[in-house]
Image 1 (cartoon, rainbow, N blue to C red):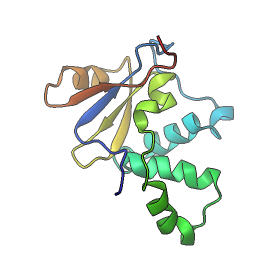
Image 2 (cartoon, rainbow, N blue to C red):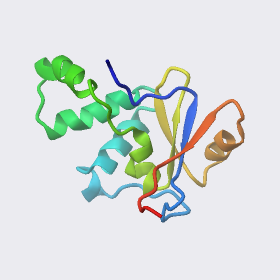
Image 3 (cartoon, helix red, strand yellow):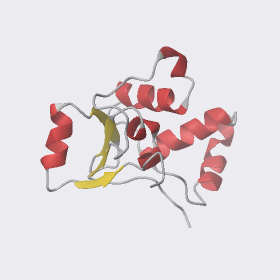
Length: 136
């Protein structure tokens, strides 16, 4: 069975315990981190990649997976469940909402932006909260 982290027509709200009220861009030295990678990939390519694409690409980088190995590794990686973008540091720590469009492609929006507010008010978009950083 193939698992997926993709959503459609869904907006991931910032976590309840997100420490910022205004979105922060991961710093230059954080570019090599998961947050930096996800931010760069999504902000430069809005609605180009799916959640699966982004999550697998980070896994491929961290594990030195070559282009020729990618297809086989993709199958193995998604043969079991993976954490979705609800666990992304962008939504948990940096103050970005993550929108999945009808095709499952993602874009990020700062919590203080007009676009973020529009997603929150749009009844046709499913809303889910990012995972909390700390357990209650």
